[in-house]
Structure formats: C-alpha cells, structure tokens
Image (cartoon, rainbow, N blue to C red):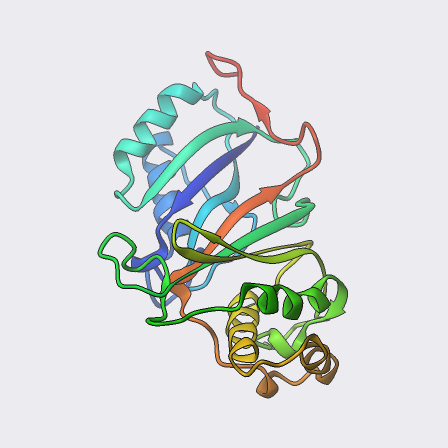
Length: 255
C-alpha cells in the first residue's frame, strides 16, 4: 500500500531534505524512524528537495508498506521517536500508482525577513537590521515573475538539468506580525531559485529599480547577474497541492 506523510521540520540542523553522503538529512531521519517502528526497510520519496538550513511547514513524503497500519498509533509512535525539530502531522493513503514529486500541481514557499532582533525568531528569519522596505515597489518588481519563464538567472545549475522553465502563479509581498513575508507559488522550483529571487528583489528595491530591470535579468539567463542567495533560515516550503482526492484519510484500524 502507498502511504503519505504530512511532515514539518526545522531545517537548521540538517543538510537538507534529501539523503546524501555528507551530512544528516531530514529524509534519513524519517526513513530510520519508520524502518525501526515497522521492522522493515522503509525508503521515502519527498515532494520536493529543500537545501541545508531551509524549513518546511508542509513536506509530503510517500512510502510503500504491505502491512496494515493503524494511523493514530503510528502517528503517536513516530512523533515520540523523532527529534524535537521534525514532526509528522498526519498519515494518509495515496493513489496506488503515484509520485508525490511529479504529481504535485503546485508548491508554495514563504520567505521571512525581520528588521529587528528577536530571540524568538532566531534561525527562522533573515535578520536584516534597520531594513525599511517599500512594499509597493517590492510587489511591482515581483510582477514580471508571474507566468511561464526560463528561470536560469535564478538557479544553481547542475549537470543533468534539462530545462529551467517554471510557471509562477503567485508572487507577492506583505507584512505579517512585524515580519516582511514573500510568498511564491509555482508548478516547480529550481535549486536555490527562491533565495536568489528574494535577494535580487531586495537589492533592486534598495536601488529603486523598476520592474523592467527584473525583466532584463530574466531574459539574460545569466546567474551572475542576480544577487547572491538570501540566507536559508528565512525560507519555508509552505504548502504542496495535489489533485482533489489525491490524499485520502486512512480508516481507523488500518486497511
């Protein structure tokens, strides 16, 4: 049976979501916990990869297991087993033939910037002391992102990349509890894309540039023209959306 997990984590202590040779990944911690509790090797597949230090409010992961699972029991046991910075919010049934990475309709990320020091936000925001943003200009600068574009300018290129096309459905800035929040939703994201976009938009806003400058950067397809990546601690994978009925509640007592 194909099971889906709704996961949240604070990425500070991890090398990212995906298992890798150097560094502890969130995926590895989840796999080890499931393998121990279910007494068989379990390997999860995540809906997306997050870089080192990046957080997730909602990461969807899937795994296969033929034994019957009582969702409430496993949910309690795995959360007792996992470290304090990772939690499983729910366990569900997914379509038998599915891939949570490629089946997602969209993903949304949020990036948080704080202009004043706060002990409660440490490690969860980009602390940019004294920053007084022009919200109207930031939103104007973000408008050219909407639509389908080649985002090579804002991507860490790597061997094997086939294309850099993404369709952005939403890109907007707002204030929330004294924090400046950037939210972006798209059909797919490239490596480092959101952090490169955030840092570039902030830089352009401080330079009082217009939207045409962002359009020029997009057309250039040149990563060196964009700003360096914004710090990872301000970024959250916020929500992953699937077709209606894709994530189904499990009946009590397993299946």
